[in-house]
Amino acid sequence: MDNKVDRSPLSCLTAGLAADTAVEVLPDGGLHMLEMAIQRAGAGLTRWQAGCFEQLSTVSLASAEITLLQLIGNGSRSKTIKELAWSTNRTDIPNIQYSLRKLASAGLTRKQGAGRSGVTYSLTEEGCQVEERLQDIRERLLLQALAGRQDLARRLHCAAETLEELTELFGEAVRQAEARSGS
Image 1 (cartoon, rainbow, N blue to C red):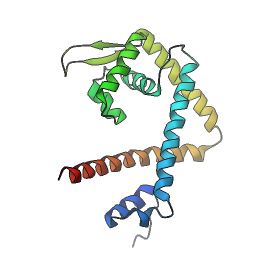
Image 2: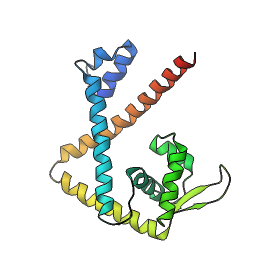
Image 3: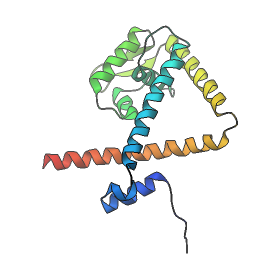
Image 4: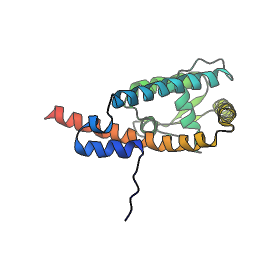
């Protein structure tokens, strides 16, 4: 008989969803605490990205553009706007297009193809150099911060997996809310 209990935050949250009450699984303001922690982490990431990018370029980019630069540079092929939207969990295509135009005007990306489904985005030579230096800075600074904290590194890996699951739950909750409001 297996008496192991899964104590991960999402196993608790999903069990509560089946009971249809967040109060049972996230008591004493736990849902608010979770949302605020995610909000603060997002703001921290925005500052982290900007701080790293400012070390290597005078180009003024927002976090959204830095994220797109990293995504386009990740892998060996060009990306479509649909792939970029999916990777960032965004639905605001006009804003993504604006960010892509900003990256292109900075000489960091280029657009290839035409039509709705034939357009892809890739990094220019300068964009590749900037993205590579950005990756180096991020890795160096993060490795320094994690030095001697192996338990934190392991927990961060688990946190990343948990956040992916939470993103799926948020998406499902949005779809359910949209379905109810459409009735």
